[in-house]
Amino acid sequence: MGCRAQRPAVAGLTPDLARRIEVTIRTRASIPFNYQVQVTDLHPDAAMPNYNDVTVTVGEYGKPGKPLNLLLSKDGNTLAQMTTFDLTKDPRDTVSDAGRPARGGSEKAPVRIVVFDDLECPFCARMHEQMFPAILNRYGDQVRIVYKDFPLSQHPWAIHAAINADCLGDQNTAAYWSYVDHLHAQAASIGGEEHSLTAAKIQLDKIATDTGSADKLDASKLQACIAKQDETPVTAGLREGESLNINGVPALYINGETISGAAPIEFVYRAVDDALLAQGVTPPPAVPLPDLNAPAPATPPAAAAPDSAKPPAATK
Image (cartoon, rainbow, N blue to C red; front, side):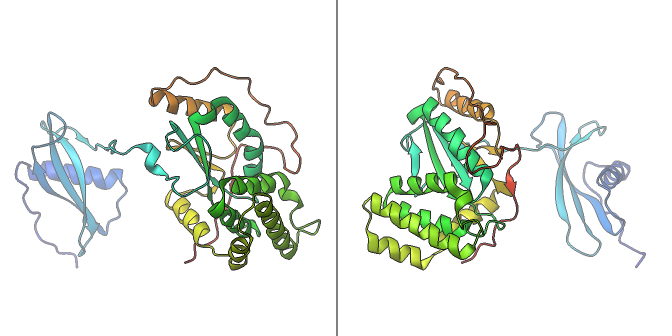
């Protein structure tokens, strides 16, 4: 087991320089003794002048290794690694708003705010009740706001509420937002003083039914949707959020820029202003900042951190 084949020669490299590269990589990356580090290729068409591309293969002895692409100066004195990022994709397309009820501007609005939301989350409620009215009042139809479902596991009725909201949204955007507004304002009262899950579900269904009646929705269709409790739309939101490494709510995507947690509104304003400027639109004049620390009914004090936990496992 202690014997191994002679080091293969790499055109353009002396054995001594190849070993210096290998030992440097092993030391810098703390690669264990049972892994092999080996220079396997050198070619001169590097992206940077005065450098050659060099490939170092790293892998457990006796198994296929993984290539590591590096840059080696032509004088052999410097080893570098260059990280590249794809700038061809529009950050606005990081999260889609397709098929979701929207508030504010049209699909052509220069700024899109996509929010991963939990209807039982107190920090989401705080943001919803105080921050978003301020955003819409300041920016009007320059901003389009969309919510996506991301109910957390510690919130027992959040999935049920999200399904009901989606049932309403399937028929009418205004009904969806009426339900969301109501739950974020009255979440503490859902389930009664004993916080009964059974009572919460009954209450959630009644609020949804009353909302549908007020907006003249198809009652039989709404009742069938509420009774079915199809988790498919909620699962889609969870899976998308997980793919974006979201681990807490609220999570905002402002033309692709991420803001996690109940951030002070001035940072949201800055992100919206920057997004408008990038679209060639002059932001509206600055306004006095709302007091997000003022007491709000049925919600706890604002916090800088998001309400975080693992979401329920996505189901088919």
